[in-house]
Length: 124
Image (cartoon, rainbow, N blue to C red; front, side, top):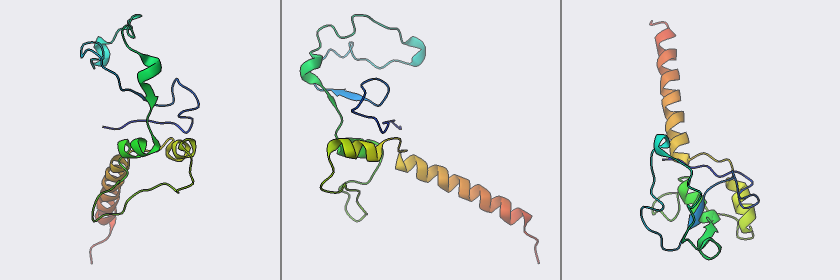
């Protein structure tokens, strides 16, 4: 699964990335459904305390969602410069691809290129 966060995350509420609701909610109220089943419910926020329990993801959480290695033993780890603010972290990660997805797409593309190249290469 992949996710999207733009470089304007935290600057604009709409269209720049996901937010996290941390309060209690009924499972039916925040149920995920297929796109075909989605309908706008004007009362979707009824009973939710959005001012108290809605927040942006931290830069570290965004990095984890995008697949950057964090705190994994035996591998390189991603970290932000210590003097970066949260907004700078969001901007740095904005418009990033999930690194695992990008690595797999690159791997498949290179395999296909090498296969085509080896087929065209004359055998001696």
